[in-house]
Amino acid sequence: MGTEITDKTIKENIRKIRIEQGRTQIDVADAAGIERTTYRLIECGKTKILNAHLKSIAEILNTSVSTLLLGEDSEVINDSVPAGYGNEQERDQSLGIEKDKEYEAELARKNEELAAKDAEIESLKSEVLVMKTEIEGLHKEVRRLEERISDKSMVIRILDSQLKKRKR
Image 1 (cartoon, rainbow, N blue to C red):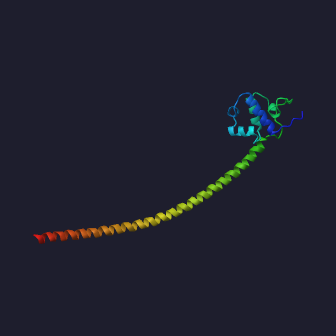
Image 2: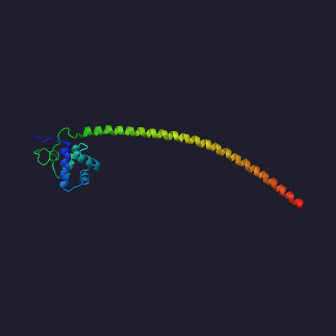
Image 3: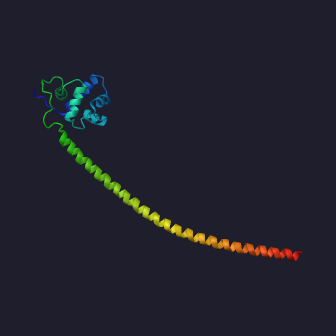
């Protein structure tokens, strides 16, 4: 009984049985309650299969865990997963550390973006203050010009009135 359990053996056994039963990866993943991407990675051999996933897949495919681990010819009767294989706690901890690093990197990137946006906002505030001052100056100039126009209009009316009187 010298059959060795490898990721390749497991993925090949799962895929073979799934195809023999005419099921899709999506069908098995959904029925087993496994993320579709995770299931795809399991069948590609790109991730270790968790004990719980292995048991779920075996149940969905109506086969034993030992068949998935060793193939149909295996003489293994015990349906338990070998100790240390696909250890969920270690994998979860490893994934947690990786996720923490990813989150920290993302957080650092977002903080840099925020700092750049804050600097941009401060620069725009300064520009707005300069523009407000310029607008206030223009308003004063407009009022002064309106007063001059008003004064000139009055002068024109007076001159026009005097011109009409002279013509009479």
